[in-house]
Image (cartoon, rainbow, N blue to C red; front, side):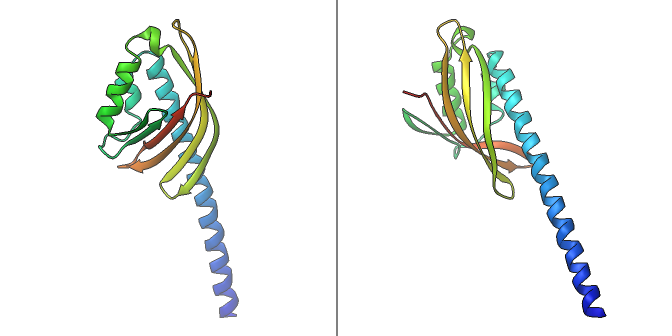
Length: 149
């Protein structure tokens, strides 16, 4: 009888842990989507500093595109400011999120597409970002963005 009670307890505990994990994953994905919506809004307001709040403010941040790898938050911001010096260049940003997948606890990757609508000519491309929960906040720690040929 004790063995059955122990097995039932373990079974209930496993079910509870699985449900809690699924709830946490849903909450994580909602928080990540909220971050990306804020970034799109900030970008569309030509607030590049606000947009960069979604990135890990560290020299270890990695940004990879057709120009190679950029290391660091400051350098990434400087590149954005150089490439998008005005509202005409930054335009309005829209993300299409195709997949958000958990890598491990506290880490996800996101695959999607971006569309810039702007007066100097529209631009579009695809991206994959890796986010980690750092000090209770989701931050992009690696970004791979490219424009299709």
